[in-house]
Length: 176
Image (cartoon, rainbow, N blue to C red; front, side):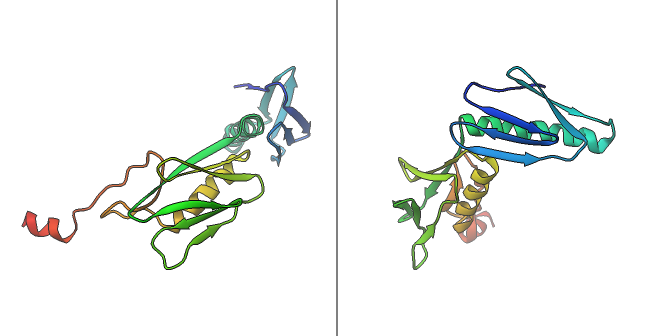
């Protein structure tokens, strides 16, 4: 599948390395020599030199990575997290995210380069940036501070994540 390059995004190919520069930022990645790239106008094609299993798997991976680079530098990526629980909240202190999630002290999360935090309504944290891998990793780091627990569902979860609830002691006694 070809990759459409939107206007305002520059793609520079140097052998098996690709550099993408857009309005949101700049990303580069070097791929193994099996993978090559060919540009025709505003369309980029990913090609492989062999039909071996390793080459076929890298072909799809390389295409997905370059597509994410193009999309990230032009539009960006974001992940939403929800903070649920009595007294649990998130607030911003400058660019730093401060989490109050049941510990004796607040947890401060510093954004990496290229990452920004925003707060939505009802305890929603929005992690955004131009590098998809870094956005996902930062969101996972925030979720790890207080993952959702299965008895009351309190904690930090991804938006739309389903947390299976357990019955607990009272539920076991009622079932017996």
